[in-house]
Length: 529
Ligand SMILES: CC(=O)SCCNC(=O)CCNC(=O)[C@H](O)C(C)(C)COP(=O)(O)OP(=O)(O)OC[C@H]1O[C@@H](n2cnc3c(N)ncnc32)[C@H](O)[C@@H]1OP(=O)(O)O
Ligand SMILES: CC(=O)C(=O)O
Image 1 (cartoon, rainbow, N blue to C red):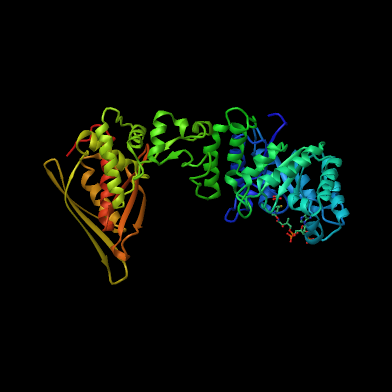
Image 2: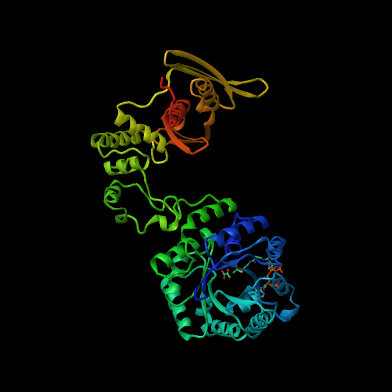
């Protein structure tokens, strides 16, 4: 990658400042590898010397545990303490000892902070910048300077921030990063400041935006438009307080909207995978609505949208989702029209082109059922069964229920046990099956499977993997309607089904029957009852 534009990632430093995130050194190594796969130019790995985990991370990276194909590893730290020498400062020496080619230093660039937080003189702060940069440059490091609170400082005393930048460049720094540390800027004001600084020339300007006004991505792109050629971001926007500029929309915006070729070839399509993998390691559920990479980023619910998408997807997508490794999805809900049903059915492998009346009937059924509390948006398998039954004239059926019964026993010793019995017909065979479970639904599920597995051996490979219950509004207290979403899995894939009823056991039963019916219909050779 050439050096004309820097995508600088700080997921492992500022991103780790998000409440709730704690990475181990191993996690950090894994996240760094993922960031390298998405093609960032610089990975700020943490603050060596500030905490043992970060020191360990850099030591292990230096020993060869981290081999990066695209990125350079960066160590982060502060300028030396007031009234000392950089060459004697323990934190500065730890930065040198991290053995990275690049070091980022955070420096005060706002007179308020120098005087009130650092409690030193403006001249001494300039000396701290100059001394620390020149020491690290003399040790062979490339130095980037994060000018903390640059934009706030620009209001208080604009010349001082510029003097800090000048001191850093005179001492050999490579990039002056203008930081919106409190995250209070909006794009109009921020880009004006960046433009004024960039127009002075002689500096490479970077941008670092916190997201306290929800404008970090917009601010970052506006800064590039105004002349910044170094952007600091974090995966999924993790960071202190409200977070940082999210790497994925920043990079996607730069490449696809601003025509900047800032990633190595082939990396943009890794964004969805890397975003989700990092969320997994951070132990934060991925934001399904995250721009570009969220699973809903190209999901269309409105019938009118689907009818235009049927003609051409670009009519309702701002870009081709595959560019960033994402997919378009059509959602079928009470807001669907025939086009939504046709497109969703096609996605599921059912062509409704020759069955326009069936599409109309499915729309009506979905609207009626959703009015009663059903929801097909997340239950593709139940929706597919509904569509197939409208096309074929009947729902696939592998057994007939004669009855089921569930018992819950609260014993003297405080233990609660559950037992279920199902009576079924498979063809002419009557099956009675009883099972125990850790709850009524588990007992019913066991009894149903044990009753059927002799006739349908493929059931042995299907497991219930998730069970979600939602009590629907509209009726008070225990008289409410219950919606159950069941996720079932086999060796190849997962599928979700829905059941609704005033009784939670019956709602679960309905979702369970759809789950097994859908699963069995996917295995050729399963005998129908
Ligand atoms: C904007 C940002 O997000 S910058 C990144 C911030 N990240 C972190 O703070 C996470 C890691 N931090 C830590 O582990 C600790 O705060 C440490 C190890 C760095 C310092 O811990 P301590 O020595 O106990 O100091 P403490 O955190 O209380 O205060 C910070 C000190 O650094 C000084 N300081 C703050 N910014 C700078 C700077 N740019 N250059 C030099 N010194 C600075 C403060 O004035 C204060 O000095 P004092 O100890 O003389 O009062
Ligand atoms: C450096 C940094 O994280 C900030 O100023 O917000």
